[in-house]
Image 1 (cartoon, rainbow, N blue to C red):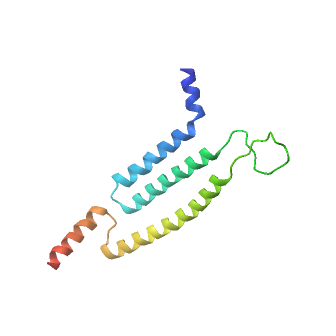
Image 2: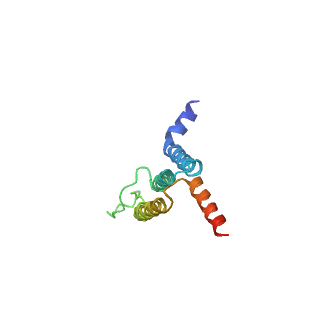
Image 3: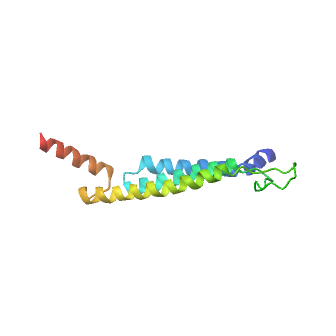
Length: 128
């Protein structure tokens, strides 16, 4: 039992990533409100960021500054740099998503998926 607890505590960040991923996925699937879906997508995206940063961490690794010591273990900075770029792209994508939600609200007076589908069906029936 003690070894199972040690294994859990040693990998707690991956359990947190899975928990956040499932919360975000649930919010996207189960909610009809578009703003709540965007929040769920951001939670999901944050869990992916945490996963990549966790995988890039090396225990007892230092910054990759060459000092001449061959026994030094260096951490790879590439995952962190990629995540910084992904954060910038994620913020821009979120802004575009919220702008589209605002335009949908102005056009349909609602941001609920079911209501918009019913309004679109009514418009197609009226056009025929």
